[in-house]
Image 1 (cartoon, rainbow, N blue to C red):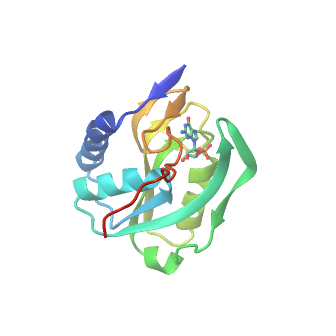
Image 2: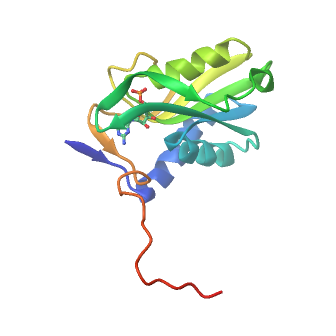
Length: 162
Ligand code: 5GP
């Protein structure tokens, strides 16, 4: 079984997720996105929550469908923890699966920030981080609209007008 998220469904999911956060009274100073999937989520949430401060952290973990490195690793440049000190941070990602990626980033934030909460579109039951804000729960592999298709390649014979 696959869970298929389309760009159309994504638009509604982000608004609903943001509404849940707003209804809860959480007003983040910073949205911290986990690249690359979390960038879409962070951008949508930041607009919907009227938060103009977005940061990004790159984490590498998955190498294919269900195959991972031993542990997730933060890639350089790692954001400066000072930027988050005394701030309310909302970590945004596409899915908490094992939850190891979110845990790595949350633990990094917890060293300095005033408050950290996490928002994801999907959370799987095995996740070791229980996110404060979840749009939908599933245990299926999810096809996201940004990664379901292979990267584009240059077509032969294409000449672009100058
Ligand atoms: P975790 O550390 O929670 O196991 O996984 C975090 C990252 O792995 C996600 O941000 C996502 O990039 C990737 N990932 C985990 N599960 C899925 C899935 O079901 N579908 C897709 N497309 N990516 C996933």
